[in-house]
Length: 165
Image (tube, rainbow, N blue to C red; front, side):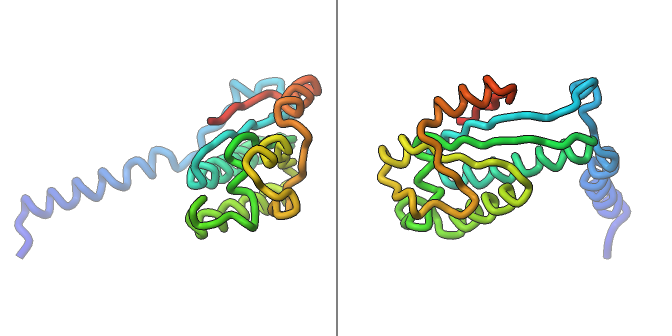
């Protein structure tokens, strides 16, 4: 039998879980930041040592793309992968590098982002340093000679840098 105090506690717990959903039912926008912005140009530099973190932030970047679209902008985004992150971008990555399921998430996100028109560039210096065969990079990725040069070039073309590490 449920007592009145237990019922009250259960209702309070349910409200505590549901109220945040009600408060955020209306999407928050970036109107102040996007005031007068006509084109969303950004270049993300990704330098991670963990596959899980790589998968997570690729999902976040896809969400950022969707948020620009939702707010009426056509995003023009580039991702430049440098450093040890390149070890997670290959069909030849072994289990010693990352969990196979995580690598599949990364490959899936690369494909989704490429389908959205996001350019995904992999630093050839990094693939050389970390022993990644360029011919084994996931579909949707393009090789760039030097990730740092690419970042400078994209910035010179008006892309706003977002560094992730």
